[in-house]
Length: 317
Ligand SMILES: Cc1cc2nc3c(=O)[nH]c(=O)nc-3n(C[C@H](O)[C@H](O)[C@H](O)COP(=O)(O)OP(=O)(O)OC[C@H]3O[C@@H](n4cnc5c(N)ncnc54)[C@H](O)[C@@H]3O)c2cc1C
Image (cartoon, rainbow, N blue to C red):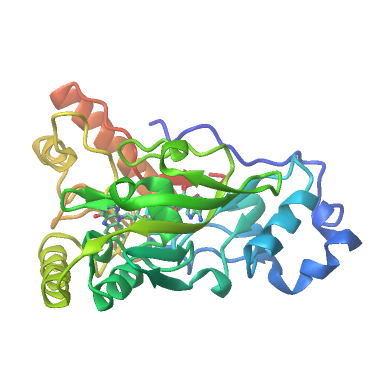
């Protein structure tokens, strides 16, 4: 069975940790925010995956920009939010994994504009908007990731998506250049954005509308109740596994292919919502990925449709 996409992040074998560029003195000023061989399995929803060769937690955009400008171009960089749409593979990630620190969690409002750091949780942005009587952001309360993840994935739910409310975003490019991108420059499509390759979203500005706080709060409660009833939100999961193919619902195709409840190792297709995979306790990333590929194979056999992964898979098998 085919396991996965090409492995994007292998450093040349010759580059041992001792010789790694991050051990050079020019990185000493970043040392307090850098960790080597950092466990990633505790910081993603599936609770699987190997370590990051290096983990960097910048405190603000300039910190991140200075670090990237100094980092040799051949060192791979992977940015993670809270890993709610992600499988970190068992072999971990070479190069540098970036998780934005506390300095990126601020949320402020001005009129109907909401400005959020990319590490702010989407739920918190919805709650702040509610408190200020700003509507149209309620859908974000149902998406358990960060704002950076929501912009990158064009996350959406309940007939709304990030692209409909985002005005602009601040990004740091792989070169270390800080830029502001307009909505048009981000190039949104279904669960996808087309920012310059390797960009890291650091801040987003949303435009809401004037609303009634009671009504907004009621809508957020409805979303919460609806998710509780239909999604395995208390399980170790990764959200929708596959994108909905045009004119179809992925979960219906999966159900029709007889995959509801299907298991490989510790990985299972959720009984509650069969476009969700769950780690029942001791799943490896490999179990989850093999199960996803098996679902794709069975759906192709029964419906002729090729499901496309929505969940991002990163690292080495
Ligand atoms: C129970 C559950 C329910 C969910 N329901 C929904 C739903 O209704 N709708 C929906 O759209 N999604 C849903 N998801 C998926 C997920 O929550 C969203 O895609 C979310 O926006 C991902 O954010 P994250 O911080 O977890 O990103 P991660 O999972 O950590 O990363 C996802 C991708 O975004 C990239 N990324 C993360 N941060 C940044 C950044 N700052 N800059 C650039 N790239 C970045 C990563 O490199 C990766 O490619 C659900 C997930 C779960 C577990």
